[in-house]
Image (tube, rainbow, N blue to C red):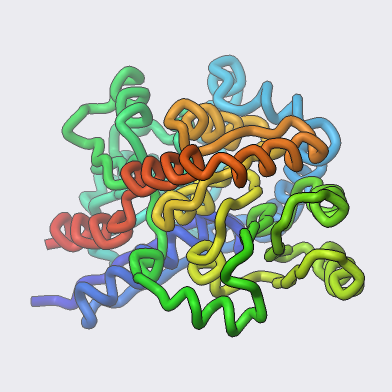
Length: 373
């Protein structure tokens, strides 16, 4: 039998889409050590100059005029008006995509973002290609840019997400409720005492993890200042992600904080940090959310990005695994109430574990191997 080959496509290095593709790739190698994988930043591969322009424009919109992104996200009018442009970009990328597929000869293709999914879906349809295409949604909001007839399977995080796709015309048989793929290490039971000791933290004191996604976004400085000045008895762990300015600021200031504060840049041990966290203050990105649910960590959400994170927030609040703070000053009050109300904190934690799907990456890998047979 020929060796199986899986092509994984995402966009942007510092993103949840990339984290998801890595988790699936690791699961594929665990299930089939002989499989050959290729994990590619598809936007950089097809349009390296355009990628930089779009990433810069996106971050500018998110930081300065987020209401614009809120309008653009999954807007039917925008979808219709950009259909011709998307088709033109897909045709423009046909040559590079053909070279990639002819050279690698994948047995299956996994896309963790809508742009490469649409590009491959159109290519499949145009050239009557029969390679299985799996679309993996990394948020609870299934926007219409995902929907193509030539996608063989959709992986979704929840029943609500599945129903939205089905209502938009996707065949129910093509929708799998596996969850958002995360690293299998989030299933492991860790030695909490050893983690507390390694980080020089007090195991008897509440431990709060503060994150702003992979790019360290949000009012993290204000949050830390307010929590540090508050009367709430806690210690803090802060993950700055790829935000070098934030990390440098934290590194300079941490020693002067009244409360014990441990600072990380792009932390590779988020599983350990979440394992000892009493609660997490964060933006509700899909991967962060899935990891926190797997670890049963109650979430305090602040300043979710419009679009996918706003929809993630609505889902998490409805399910009772998170509370939302409108501004940094609200966080101190909300956190104080949560730490005081141990029963509510426990219920949120148990509900999070019940909602979690820590086997998602393995389930997706198993499906890809079956489809590629």
